[in-house]
Length: 430
Ligand code: ATP
Ligand code: MG
Image 1 (cartoon, protein in one colour):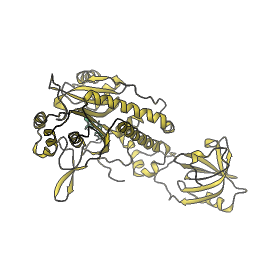
Image 2 (cartoon, rainbow, N blue to C red; image 1 turned 90 degrees about the vertical axis):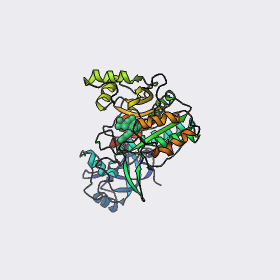
Image 3 (spheres, rainbow, N blue to C red; image 1 turned 45 degrees about the vertical axis):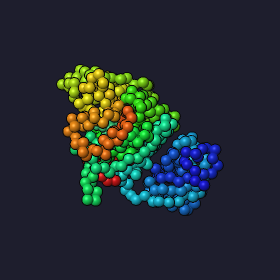
Image 4 (cartoon, helix red, strand yellow; image 1 turned 90 degrees about the horizontal axis):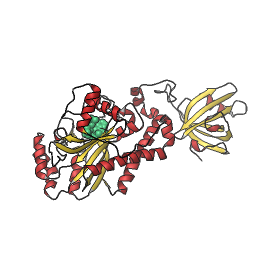
């Protein structure tokens, strides 16, 4: 019976494993195969004297990255990976790999990111790469468990929509029968409507589509958003929820993905301490101006250079709070005492923005006014606005980029490494 390679120990008498041929070495009297599955690597040692004709032929002819089935006796071997080896009585090629390989899985030949992404199925055979996706899976599961335990309903909302969330031109138009439609840039409007439905607490983990033409290391054209909306909570409440979720994700990864963390070489994997500092927007701007020497001023967006400068000063996760109403979306609630400032926040990792959120406008007239102020036509949003006329509770929420969370947690230099098959300006295949 097949067992995972990791479970073969020096005291296992016999084992049958399936794995890919990682390396082949011929030392004259002895031949070695290193065989790898997702759990580890094992040495298969073939003494040329005493091995069967079939085993010898297979070892001679098998190509790297072929899938093989190996059965044999397990022996302790201090110098081999995991301190054990298999001396096989059977090696069967289950799936032969063609040569040459589009990518060297053993990483003897370094490959650039484009080559790796073109041959992603081979790239993902690398322990370092598969570790990223095991960690990603652990994070998403931790988030789901956390939110379910807090009474959040998991929902899925349409990705094919008729109107933009925030206006602007960052939408992918698609042909939808005789109508024009778009790929949704955010579930924002739908999760707010569900507050009107009385669901109280919802979350969605799903794709968002942004047609921005940027080509950066932190933007994708199709990303995954962890979206939360909660009634009867204000921005302070959902900020607390957000920092707790970040800390829980790190804790879960530390507790359940120790091997993956080691594979990624993350030697100081620290769970961020909560609460995260709250940095008012005005102070953030001051730091950016001081550190960059640039002319950033009140009312400006915080761009990449500013973001980096502030991150260098903060050196931990932090929130930017008290944003000018003018540079946040129409659905962010202005402060009662100063409507030029709104109850919005961004969650920042020292390297980049991870999440944006706010307390929302739940009052129909205010929402209408703010939409018009941003030049949006209320008519095309009537499906969204109507629920606000029938008992909309006060509510707040945020959207957290899953890839940015994975990227910053795993210390990846490019967001494309945090998604299996990235979509960017130039990449539509595979
Ligand atoms: P940025 O200013 O960094 O481009 P944003 O403010 O436009 O981000 P939001 O609309 O606030 O993004 O979306 C909420 C979160 O979703 C972001 O903080 C980010 O983590 C993630 N996100 C948004 N757009 C992208 C994208 N193009 N690629 C990857 N993640 C994204
Ligand atoms: Mg944002």
